[in-house]
Amino acid sequence: MADDNRPIKYARYAIGEIILVVIGILIALQINTWNADKEARKLEFLTLAELKKNIETDLESMDLMKTSLNSRIRACEIIIQSLSSDQPYHDSLNIYFGLAMVYDDMDFHKGIYESIKISGNQLIDDNSLRFDINNYYDYSVQDMEDGIREIRDDFYNYMLTYLREDFKYYRNIDSKAEPRDFEALKEDMTYKLSLGIFMDVNRMNLRILLNTIQASTELIEKIDQRLSKIER
Image 1 (cartoon, helix red, strand yellow):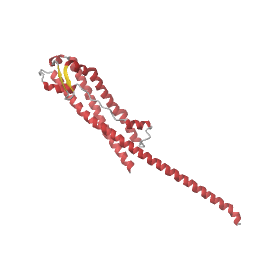
Image 2 (cartoon, helix red, strand yellow):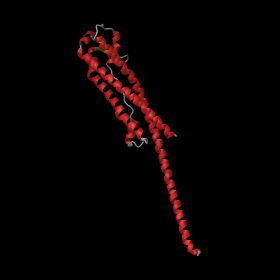
Image 3 (cartoon, rainbow, N blue to C red):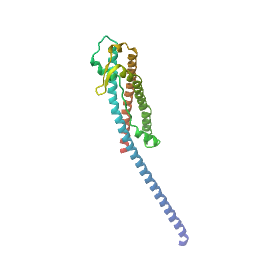
Image 4 (cartoon, helix red, strand yellow):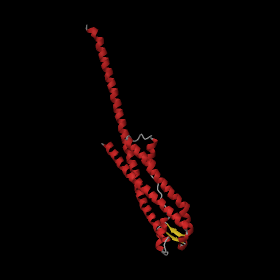
């Protein structure tokens, strides 16, 4: 009778061994999955931390550009007002002529964002944040780059010609430009029109810049929230 039960005991033992092996495999897979997820979150943390640094660096540049744009717009207003009045020439206007007819340039730091795109956006696990990052670079930053390009094109197509032909010199070190003939500039409707258009383009770019600064600040806050969540 004992011999009759022996195959059943062996079968139970074998099944028990198989179950233990399966459990061991499942545990190993779970550990591998956990380790892989841990490494993915570590990579996401490093990626977001570097992206935040890029945005903060660009934000500093945009703050400087905001000051420059405000100064340029004000300079254009003063020059246009002077040319449209009976005010005689004074060398104090040279600083405003110089400030009015220049442009700002800026290159956004997009290396980390390009890496995120190359990965198929898989580096960022948070879907909402991933959307916000793409939206920021595809729209806010793109609008800013388009605005900078338009001002640069206007400078080279219009303002640079006036600087070369109608001014004695332009000193970049102190942003001063002295007109050859102030009274002739008063009668030059094309110059005044071009300067007015240049001022309006700068105003438009200032509005775009302010929107981009706000978008940058909001995105940094969202990145900080995600970084804090990953750290926990």
